[in-house]
Image: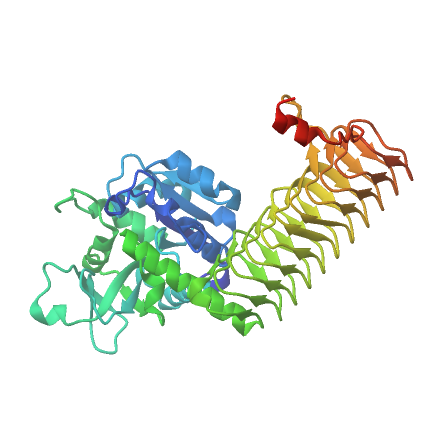
Length: 467
């Protein structure tokens, strides 16, 4: 009695060992980025919607350590291919970890647009057809450079052969159905016959594409299923193709966000990474960059030329033009900018204001507090309802160590003040303008740390006369 379909164990193997010679880069091909993260990370994300991380294997080779470090947080497994002798050889290297599975799906680590829906279709069709090999094909208006899929008949799923570009006959060149390089294979049939692959090609490599012919000669069924979206299977062999895929991915992201209730003016001018989340009724103005794992709430307005990376923005926040946020958290109703710089560790409370040319780093700014002008706040804990005057500086570094400034609720810090940490300003205290504060200030106290003003009448006339 055969196993029910749902119990058949499926692995996913992602080809990620190549150099990407045509990119003219010293870096691994699969670590080049589109949509704000490495090519390989996109493929893993789709694969993880289909299979558990423990059933996904990245076959790595060139700069293997760097590739593994970049994506090991996903929980997938890794197979080393040393040396790299083609896609067929990659699966030879993976024979041992794949031995316990019924079937394996092969994905390309440089094709970031592949969707989990298409991976599932490929898996399910392969199971239903009970074939030895199922290849994913696509219809391209310009198939130049791709292997053509030759079917047994016009309406047949059965594949007679895959013919590469160079040996195609004139009639075969007119075929627009191409082989994508994505496959589903019976693990038993694959490893029963993989040793029959040959290296009689210009590169002396074992090509997985040749498995179709090998299995056909062994009287094993080989079939094809065509993707509904030819974009999904396109790889990135050149810098131009990388940019084209990036533009496609970002355009799709903008359309998806707009479908969810976000207004994006001039989306072609914006850079929005694939993992960014934005709430409904938020408006994104032209020339905004939203990067990494940024989360933006509802009813916000992000004005032009702002760059927000790996930050959490609450509901109803306004970010005025030219702000830069990196690793920051901003509470609901806060107002930033223009030209504020929130560095990692900045936590801005509800309704707080961080204004023109204010820089924060590792700061907690309490609810309703304000730092509106020309200020640096680093390594500080600032309470609620605090006013930080223009030109204030927390001196957090003594040349060796960082120190913390504590400003309790309701404090008023006058303009051009210098707070030399470690120092604490008690609740409701006042600091006179232009003060240098080196000692703690008790609650409800006034601290003035400046020399007494001296006025010398007639001094200018004496200087001019030389007396």
